[in-house]
Image 1: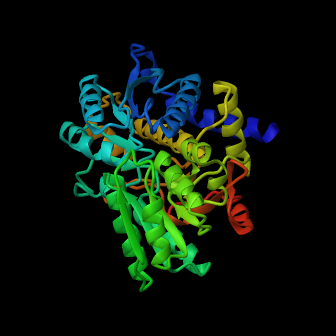
Image 2: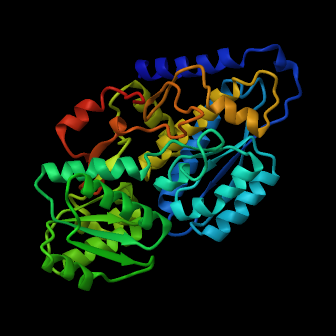
Image 3: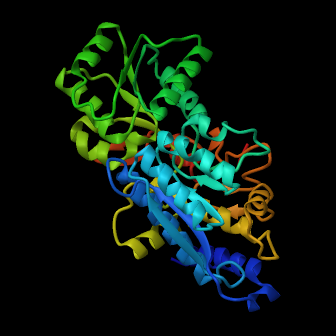
Length: 400
């Protein structure tokens, strides 16, 4: 426990130093931070742990004095995993006068709301949604859209490189018809093309599909030796269960929804062995991560349903706070917060990574490929796919 106390003391001590200012005498008005995500509905399995990670960070930050003596106040809105609900909630958050918003788990939901934040000059930090286009919609220098999750343009090549090393080079792609599936399909196809490969079969399907046996049989007849999926966790379970129903033992690989409870619980034994890209696995591999896991359990008293969502939301909250400390006059308008995020002076030793200049005017994505490793489903939980990944995880990576 001593290392855990040491890391937390150092983190809170750093915040206290940053907070020390004559401005402490100002009125104790709260600093409003928006939070948006799917806290009900079919994507709530990773929306809820996202919110929990943010709540943990805010509790710690407020213990250390908040921003210049002003506590952070979360303004939480549920987008229900629905683009229209997300748009309405985003418009409301901007009206609430938040200094910035942390949120979105679904690429399609985020995509419909980006203009709200950009036009209002209100910074948005995306801690979960991974669709490549989200941080590419606006010219980087003008963009108010930041991200602490791994965009698919780095996830897809990472996973493709891994499966090719295993000799799985006849790929069947199963992607849904949402913005997430569309962007993911393109990224996988581009990653295969870079290897001078192409998919032997492609299936597109809408959310809510309940049976993909016919499509999987067609993929098998095309000679596929691996399935690369891009969809959310309930539909991932449909793929795994349909694969089991036709007696096909081909590997299932993909992005991080394969680590979500709605997939693991929905597919049960059919989920075993599924492989996916990860930035964080809930193992106390070092002092920071042990502290995070301990404090999360103490605050929320339950299993961390999707550790990546919780950790990325937690780190995003600290990065926003570190940025705010770069604004010493207390004038937290959108352009000032954007500039502060692009020029964070102090290194934040986070859970997922060590963040040294995570954002700049020309780069709004904090996660780089060296921070990824392969995870797999084993006995209903996520662990490291390879011993070398577990060993590499002992050293917290910095941006490259």
